[in-house]
Length: 194
Image (cartoon, rainbow, N blue to C red; front, top):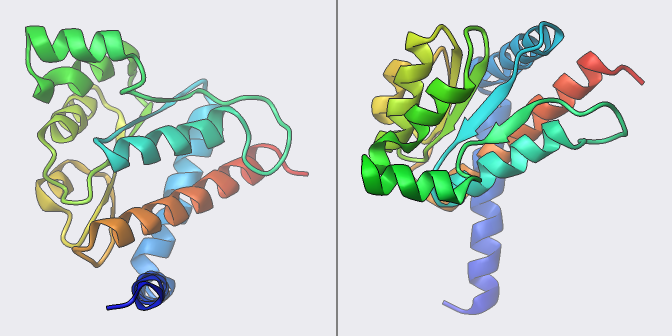
């Protein structure tokens, strides 16, 4: 397969998957619902925490930055944090306890009832993300999961699930960012109308 065919195939598959999301009323309604919950929580001094591994950690950090910095326009910052950014904590807990516990311990330390945890896992089976979601639910936090098709084990720990209908990791991650960007825009517009 030549290089241009690979590029065209990747773009085509990305477009097709996003077109499927366009007709998925549950996903669209869930985007709106989560953005409304986030707006309500921010109005009451809540915060949004994110967690994921690998590319999903990068997506978690990206979306946290959109909320804490800015998305489209200048406005006050919002509390949003990707839980993997403190590498000293991450490596200490992974070493002293286990990698499966790193996010759950941070949720316990940083989260409060009514806060929001967004977990990203393309398979839906990342144990450290699942443990964090479980800890968040125990604490009365709202949990949202960004996964691939079916939601994996994580679906049982999500108040809101964005299960992108694919098993293709890069295409799932592209959809996660599109969903996340829509949420960020709705939150920004909802809290800070132009």
